[in-house]
Length: 346
Image 1 (cartoon, rainbow, N blue to C red):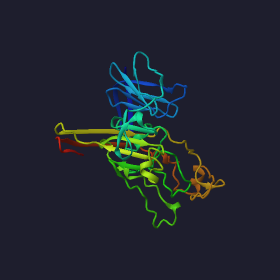
Image 2: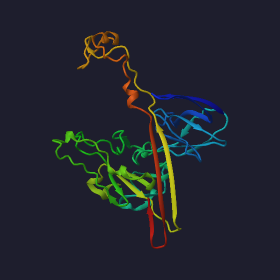
Image 3: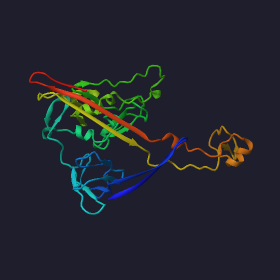
Image 4: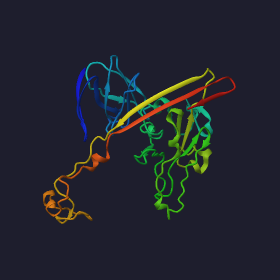
C-alpha cells in the first residue's frame, strides 16, 4: 500500500512543505493473555528487520511493516514467544500463552552456570538480542518489559541520567535506605553506594541512578535476574534486594572479528496537557504578575491595560520543554584469539 504523507515545519528563518511517498502498511490491534486481559509492554518485531513496537498498558500495539511474506514476532516476560504470519487484512489479535520456563542454562550466583530445571529458586535471563532490540540510553532501560515482576524507571531525562530497578519492591519508607539490587559484573561486585555527607539527613539524598548504566549494552552477553532469597544466599545481606548478574561478551578462538553497528531513534511525546489561554496570573481576579499561591487573574486584555508589556498570549511551556529528542548510538568492537588467549575490546 502506497501512502502519501505531507509534512510541514517552520521556524524564524524557514518554512517548507515536504512530500514523502512511503510504501508501508500499519498494523494495529491488541495483545492478550489466555484470560483475555491485555499484556502491557509486550514487544512486537517484524522478523528479519529492526522495525519494532511496544504494547501500551492495555496491550494495544501499532507497527508499520514493509515488504512481502511479513512475520511478526511477539514476546513478553513470562510468556512464550509467538510468530504471526500476516495475510490479508490489517487487524490481528494475538493471544500469548504463559511460559513454563526460559532457557535451559543460566548464570547464577558467583557466575556459576547451572541447568535451569535444577534450580530451586526464581531467576530470569535476558539475552543480548533482546537487550539491543530497541534503542535505549542504558542497559537498565532496555530491560523494561522484559523482566517479570521488576519495576524499572528512569531517574531523569537529562543526558547521562541513569535508571533504577526494583526487584522486590521498596523495602523501607526511609528515603535514605536503598532498595537497589546488587550488581555483579563477570563475578565482580559493583559498588553502588551513595555518600550522604553534608546533606544534613537522609531525607536530602538525591537519586543518582547507578553505575551499571555506564555499561555499553552492545558489550553484554546476557543478564540474569536472581529474585528469591535462596538465589541470593551466597551474597548475604547485600543481595537482600535481589541480584543482577551481568555477563559480558568474550572473544572466541576462531580468528579476529570486527563488528560495527549504528542505531538512530527519535523520541516524541504523545500528547501534552491542555492549557487555558484566556486568563493570566493574578489573585481573586486582579492582575498580579507574581501570582503567589492558588489564584486566578483577569483576562489577557484586562491585564494589558495595567501592564503594556504583558504578552499577547499565554505561552505553552509544555511544547517548549518536550521537544523531539534524537538518539544516535555507534558501536565498534573487535574480538578474537586462539586456544590459550582470547580478547574482546570495544
